[in-house]
Length: 210
Image 1 (cartoon, rainbow, N blue to C red):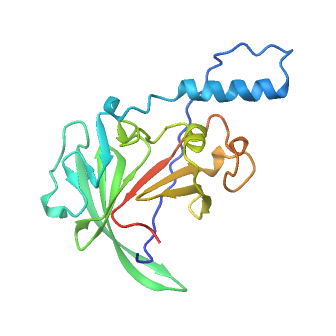
Image 2: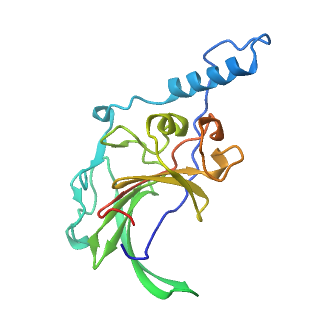
């Protein structure tokens, strides 16, 4: 894969209501267990059938990886109202400069997902804040409980320079904002993730990242 790696951290917090009485007699272990129960209860179902749109197998609604920008619908009911194609020149002291192509998709005046492109051809999908109505084939979405995902998927998490911790799972990449972590730069155990932390970005790559 080319040196064009990409991610934009988007911060999203889901409020966790107290579902279990936490009396003063509870010890620390019981309180931590209660936090985990609350987080799981707040998370939506992971059944992708409940999502308005499902991202998977290189497709998102009528959009598909490999599709040309010129063939994109101007809007798709419920998915996006408009899109914008843009080229950006990236400067790097070590690697020189290169041009990146992006397609930004908007709903209600807000950018909710985007696609990296090459030669005006869609090469990825990047779900951002406001796209919780889009689910992966496994039922994950932006705004999903970070603790829940961490517990379900045993992934190797790393630190991203854009202010998130991220982990890759085949064609997928998941991001947690560093503000959602307790002290570590990336989570190695459940307690490293705050109960309120959520997934801030999900990326689907055409090709497996290196």
